[in-house]
Amino acid sequence: MAVYKIFPEKSATLYSYYNSLNSGLDEILELSTFYTITSTNEVSRLLLKFPQSEITDVISNKISGSTYDAYLKLYLAYASEIPLDYTIYGYPISGSWNVGTGKLADSPITTDGVSWKYRDEISGSTWFGIGFPAGTTGSYTGSNSGGGLWFTGSYETSQSFSHNSSKDIELKVTNTVNAWSSSSISNEGFIVKHSNSIEFTTASKFETKYFSAETHTIYPPCLEIRWNDSVYSSSLTQITSDLIVATITNNQSEYQQDSVQRFRVNVRDKFPTRTFQTASVYLNNKILPSSSYWSIKDLDTEEIIVDFDTNYTKISADSQGNYFDVYMNGLQPERYYQLLVKTVLSNKEVLVLNQDYYFKVIR
Image (cartoon, rainbow, N blue to C red; front, top):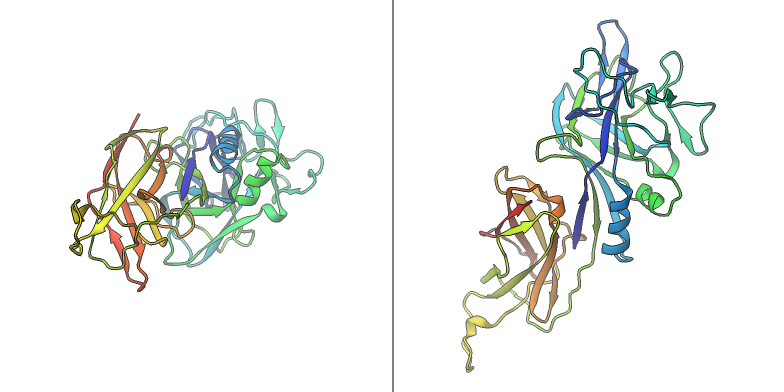
C-alpha cells in the first residue's frame, strides 16, 4: 500500500573517451556506446548515490518490519539508433567517489571529481588499486584503465529491452539495499552499464540519455521503496456491481511536499434499495473489494506517477470504509495530480474510478 521515493544526492557519467572528464553537474546521464572520429570504440556508464540516512529512516520507521522491494528508476530524455533488443546491468559501487563540478560541454574540461579514470581526480585516487577487493570486479583495464569498480554475485541486477518496450530504467535492487541496511557493504551508490557483449564493439552504436540528479524537470532519478501494509478488516458490505457512487471525502486540495496523507474513499449504491429506517438510504456506506488499488497521474502531462500495483497500492478497509496513504515526498511540488481508483468485482469486472480527485503538492 505504500510507495516511497528517495532522490539521489549525486550522479555522474563516466566517458571512456574522455577519461579524466568530470560531469557531476550535468543535467543528463548518458548510457551509450559510440565510435569516435579517431576510430575507437568507446562507451559511457552512469553513477548515482542515494542518502543512506533516508533509506535507513524508511526501512526502520516507515516499513516497520514489513517485507519490501527497492527499484532504481531513471527516465529517458533522448535515444538514438537503439537496437531491437539489448540488456543493461546495475551493480553497487565499491569505494567512495567525488561528484565534482563539471559538465560534458565544459571547455576546457573540468577534472575536479569522478571520471572514467579517477574516483577523485583532486586526490589522485583511481578506480583500480593493486588488485580488486573481495567480491568486486571492473571490466576494463589497460592503457585507458578505469570505468568503475563494483560488487558482483547476488547484487547484479538487469533489465532487458525489446523493440516496443519503454526505455525508462527500472532495476530491482532489493538485495543491494538490504546489504546497505545490514552494513554488509557500504552505500556508495550504483553503477549502470551495458552488457559486455555490447560495450566496446563496432557493431552496436547507440545513445540513451537519462535525466540526472541535477535535472530541472519533473523526471529526476529515484530509489523507489515499495511495501504492502494494507489492512482489510471491516464489517461493512462490499459492493457487487458497477452501479455505485464513490467519493474521496477528505481531499484537502493542497499538501506539503513532506507530508503523508490518508485518503478516505466513501462508496454507496447509486440506486440503493429502499428500507424502513430513519436515516437516508443514501448514507449507507459500503466498501470496495479487497482487490482494489490506487494510482496517481500527473494532471498536466497525463503520465502515471504511481501505477496500479496488486502488491504495493492495495486499498485498505476498516469500520469507516476504504482508505490509502500517500507519501507526498515523491511528487514534484507546485504541480497538480489526479487520484485514480481501480477495483475488481467478484464477477471479474474491472472498474476504474476516474473522477475529479485532484490535489496540488506545495513547498
